[in-house]
Image (tube, rainbow, N blue to C red; front, side, top):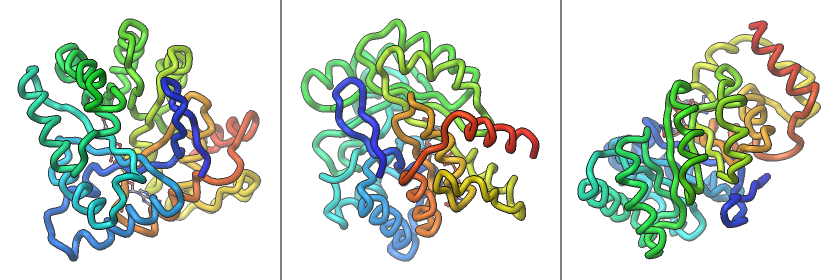
Length: 275
Ligand SMILES: NC(=O)c1ccc[n+]([C@@H]2O[C@H](COP(=O)([O-])OP(=O)(O)OC[C@H]3O[C@@H](n4cnc5c(N)ncnc54)[C@H](OP(=O)(O)O)[C@@H]3O)[C@@H](O)[C@H]2O)c1
């Protein structure tokens, strides 16, 4: 799979990862978890690494931890979770619980979810990083209205390794509001909601797939939407969520081969805007 370097360390990150919101929030025993185990296996088999979760996502951290243990795959994965509470002590407690649920000694990346009480958690995370209890620190937000605030924090606060936010062919605000700052500050970018929770695929349902997209090795709409994002140089990886192994295979294929550039990117934008 194509990789990008995490600017703060130079560690390689495969461009397609996995989101777990809703998809991994299952308390349904083995039957419900079978397809999820397959989704993880598919990701890891092609060299994918990043799995993004949060204490906000119900059972998702516990399910991710259990399945990775079953697969013996913790060493091959890059675990990203979040802290989503107020107060120093509650934050520490929540991060300790995530560490247990994910079945790991050290979480790769802990992000401050939706900037909740971010100053408090940033101080804790800096200490944890110094002590080797977390490898990377990040901040996230899910609204486009918060992109300027994320950019302001990246400019003001040293030591933030990752920023996570929504960006898709339909919502391109980040192209002007945040991606240039991330590139300039050397902060890795994780793109969430690349399919707008599936809305992009519903919008093109029944429409013929454009032949010209095969020029940059896309054979499905999902791959086209993901390659549009990965083509952006500031993007480190994208984390579409799925609990469906066929969808995972489709998404992973978006991490291979040529990427669209220049006039091809323009053609993708024009096609979308004309829908
Ligand atoms: N503030 C934050 O930090 C924040 C906010 C939002 C999201 N996130 C993270 O970003 C991840 C991704 O965002 P998201 O879950 O909101 O939305 P998304 O990845 O844009 O879309 C997920 C939806 O698309 C469907 N899908 C995925 N691949 C598909 C394919 N190839 N063909 C057809 N349908 C497909 C999935 O259904 P199936 O399961 O049926 O495939 C699911 O309903 C989240 O899971 C979470 O980890 C973080």
